[in-house]
Length: 456
Image 1 (cartoon, rainbow, N blue to C red):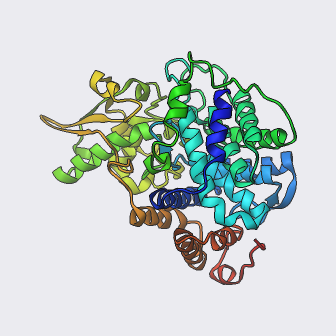
Image 2: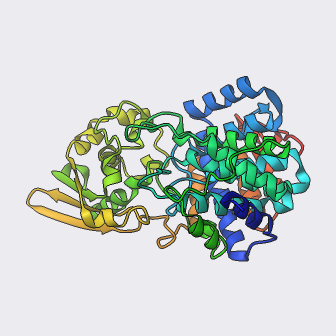
Image 3: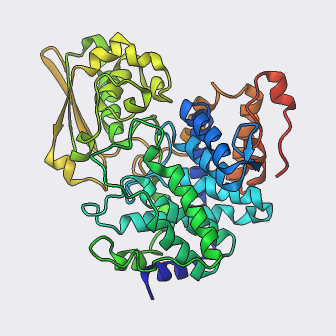
């Protein structure tokens, strides 16, 4: 039996998950919704929505917080793009990528198709994380780079929705194999997928994965040995470790809308400035010692777009020093790109490779930051930035993140309704959340209180 078949057998044998994993799953749903609220309003979010309708057509499946609807594939693509567009979506260190932006929209769209699936949806999301993170973690990062999430998230989406819909183990195996075959695997020169709306090809790979599930259930065959090559994957690690722990419990969450590699320096700078009561004018030099992969980011000191800004340690530190952490939650103000104060700090940042920091990647994303103020220097080492399981953002912090992200885009009544629906989701009832996500963004308090929702 091939590895993909063994994996599918394990998936099909899942009947439930422990309460701790369900709690973690519901936090992932909350975080995905929080990220989607501002994400759907961005240029990239709008383009993804309009493009999805042009490709897959109009339909009855809601595109979140919009009056438009599309087919299941179109809605999944658009909702996935909204979640990941601002780089606010969750991630997992073992996968070195972002499962939530793919799996959560895929499963929720499946429930829009068939509301009777709602009681199984939370477990299906946990199943998707288990498959995607396990596949990504079983590869050799040096020979098969899966830092680009699109290279494995389609397999996760196919497995999650396949389990939810009761697909056979054979169909799930075929879908996993096919999704891996057509995943974005193009050779890239460094981080060429950053600074644009592709977002590691997460929406594309997610749609591909669901196409593969449809094909597999129709009898379409795929190369079932795709996970067998030990030059790239460790089949033993993938299969033997599959049920050792529920991997969704190791998800990290982002407090800032930028690459996770940037978060440790931000946390260090915030701590130094707060403890020393510093302003940005006091800073004369910033030195960041970090791991090699962080140095491979574009790291433009004066980026020409907010998409590129998300992948710049110097610029994000400039925003942090000059404007404070709130400017990063989310980073959507185009005025930041020309702000003299931001650019003055960004120009002072030096990035340095550190072997100790590098030895912890990808299990951790640490950095050491030294802030100089004339003759005085202050150093902070951050091994686990805020949001890691060892430095967690709990329910209160995640709901605060939701409020900060939602309040500029939703009138108070609609935000309150969505918040109540998220509370219901936390206690196990998903239906109110599906209803609220189907409501278009209201333009006034009156429309917020009278807006009708699509039936779920």
